Image (cartoon, rainbow over all chains, first blue to last red; front, side, top):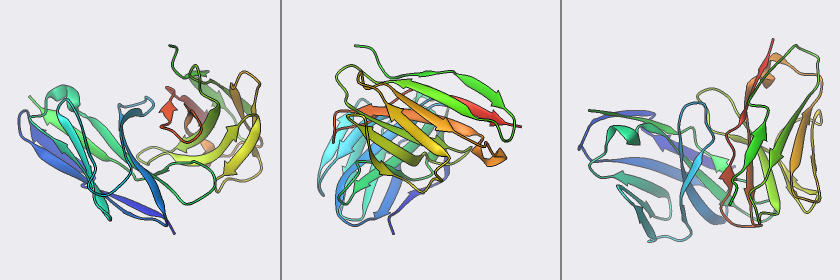
Length: 111
Length: 111
């Protein structure tokens, strides 16, 4: 059965304190791994797609990496506006192109 | 380019009633997926529509049904509402196998 586990569940950082969020997955036939950011009461906002081990993508203070078993979202010198829940999702196997989500990491950046 | 829109924003229903939620997909997108997100959880896949046909379904009972229209907009219908149906309902649109872009969601409360 497909499984996506995100850690930690919650993370508090001081402004400027870099850290990483983890997404480990067990799926049959990974087709893509997706990172989203979600603010309270709103829909997820697309950040990155990674397709193969070794791939990396960057956007402003965020960098996503992928191995065969996990993905990391690195946050460099975070600002308070980076506070949100970060969701990881996988697309796997043949058939429908649905996303299978983890439960997210709730990030709080303190000024 | 208009993003994904959903209506209504909030909805309060009582147990046993029926509800219809609506979604307009992003311009150029032909695939719509619906997700249910309970508080503190990641979104769970309900079903997906491609060219007006259901293209995959998650682990949800038949009282969850949907439609996609020729302009690729979509509806989610839920019959015989239960208390556990209270959640944020998210619609996402995409071009076939590409990234899914989410709308702001509809918050459904069942009393």
